Image 1 (cartoon, rainbow, N blue to C red):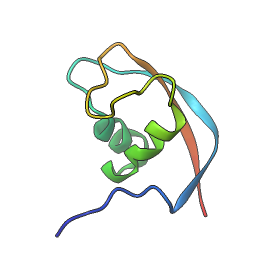
Image 2 (cartoon, rainbow, N blue to C red; image 1 turned 180 degrees about the horizontal axis):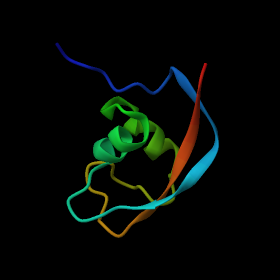
Image 3 (cartoon, rainbow, N blue to C red; image 1 turned 90 degrees about the vertical axis):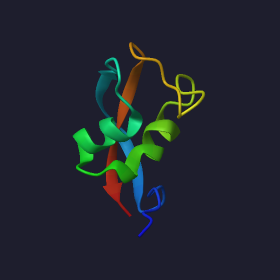
Image 4 (spheres, rainbow, N blue to C red; image 1 turned 90 degrees about the horizontal axis):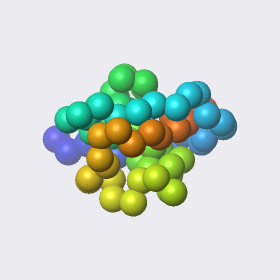
Length: 72
């Protein structure tokens, strides 16, 4: 069973906080930490266009804004 990233069920309604990626961390891991699922990582990309140029390669030490999500 393939799970598709969820980038349409929620809307971004603000910013929760800033977060600095640690060595070895991925956007899916950050998504899992904040929202309990890996599938919401596209919102991190959408909320950080100036910082995340390539979602597959975000260097550790990068500080991103964690979006506050609300179900549509």
